[in-house]
Length: 260
Ligand code: COA
Image 1 (tube, rainbow, N blue to C red):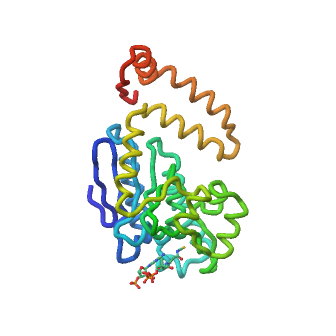
Image 2: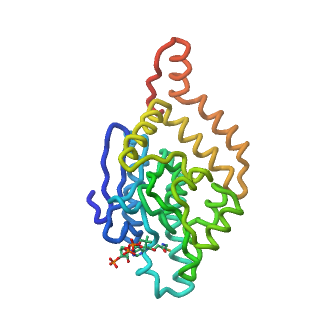
Image 3: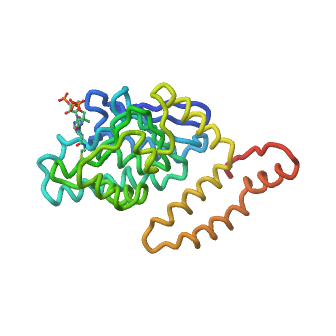
């Protein structure tokens, strides 16, 4: 599969997806969102892929937002459709992937860029990164889940201030507020996410995907997270990975998980 605006690279079980429109600071246009959907769907169905990294091309930006030039003349109806389609194809899709997805925030993550990073399961940033939801400065609000996920990650008061002021958090502020888990230099970004991804690779893929579903359940309307946890916990007992994990522990050897 070849794409216009994204690149993919495989190393062991780790797939690195790079959004590649550096001349537009990797802004998410329609084509890029469709391509990301197609690629991520394939990666999630590929049992050889156990961790996905999403990053941006170049040294300046992760993603500087939705492509403003594409929606500047939209009607109210088209605006709502843009948000709904984007959430379905990319943002909710990423959050609900069974494969762990890590955002490597290598520069500006603004608007849809920060929303994409927040849809990922967790985030690592380089020290030049700047993050914000500046939509109100354009007369619009975040439409790809930003008003929901930012308060979940940094708390309601901080999220309200950042959104109202169209401000930008430095990488250190993002670390302090829990928006990103690690801040490293640009050179260290790849080695850091590879080290973390390699730690994930040692564990049971099937258990990890059930853990993602259980954690996400807390944020879904009408779903009881504790009940989801009980069900997913029970399901693990019927997996080959559980048999292997417990047997390997008792035999004092390393587990060889198959993800089944
Ligand atoms: N949509 C479309 N194009 C974008 C874009 C976006 N969200 N963000 C940047 N670009 C384009 C610029 O238009 C410019 O294109 P051009 O060279 O054809 O004119 C190119 O990317 C480089 O951006 P530029 O603004 O010249 O870089 P800068 O270093 O001066 O500023 C930013 C960087 C990130 C501060 C600035 O690009 C910006 O504010 N972008 C919009 C951020 C935003 O509001 N995002 C939310 C969208 S809902």
